[in-house]
Image (tube, rainbow, N blue to C red; front, side, top):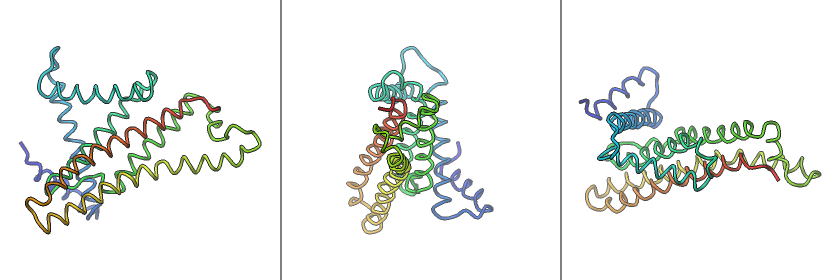
Length: 229
């Protein structure tokens, strides 16, 4: 069994010839670490599926089932096809947030490149789904209810839609990067008992930020499925 720190050092050595260092290197390294960690958990949870689940299978079924119920309650039955996308983003962001609470580990979501990548995926998925569902009629979502105001509304709606990935990116990045900086300061000043309350708050922040990102992604996709009025 390869020690996680040795594996992370191996990834860092792979990035050195590419002249990638600092925060960008840490974001890439820990992103791959989270991806591989989730792949391993998926294999372990599904390699021996039982009718009566137990252990890791039971835990993963609770997580996946909870996200699926949330998708259906928010988007309705027609939201089920988007469950894999929503669940993947939610679990990846949550684990990326939580991994920053481990001393010596860096949360990928504390880097703006990672949060921007997740936000762009939601942005593209929203409009691809809208065009696929409505065809050319999807343009009506940008024209507003009054015909003579359509040219003005078009630019307002375009700006509003472009601001979505920006807000998703900055909200997640700002919260996670800010919490990471606060933790580093507390660990530097008092490395024992004082940082514990901040770490507990970090768990809460990690769950809230993953939930908010997932909820907004569902709302945006749901909006693209609705008929323009």
